[in-house]
Amino acid sequence: MLDSDSLRWMAELGTTLTTTFGEGVTLSRYENAVQWSYAGQSAVVELRAGGTLEATFVERPVLDGVSASPVAGVYRNTGSRYRLSPEGCSRMVNDMVDFFQGVREPRFTFVNAI
Image (cartoon, rainbow, N blue to C red; front, top):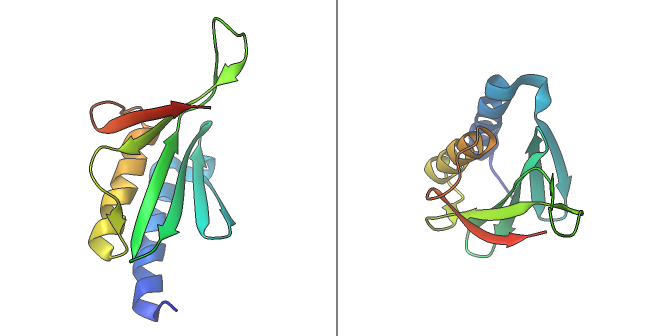
């Protein structure tokens, strides 16, 4: 259970995304994950054991030249998982802002394509 202080700082961090990207940013939740999306890109954040958050960043789909099918690059932050704390979540939101604004390697590591 999260206390009211935790809920307050988590709401403040979400405000950073809406202030930066306006109504173009969306949020959805399923099970232990939330997905922030903007302009076809997504950051899927999952709560993990031990009070950490793992974020997977998904690029907007593009048409693959060989298969003619849509594909999207999948990235993770080059550092470690984020701590479930004001500092860790602030770092995660800053990474989301950078990713949504086009920053990729070396800040993020390519891990897959879907």
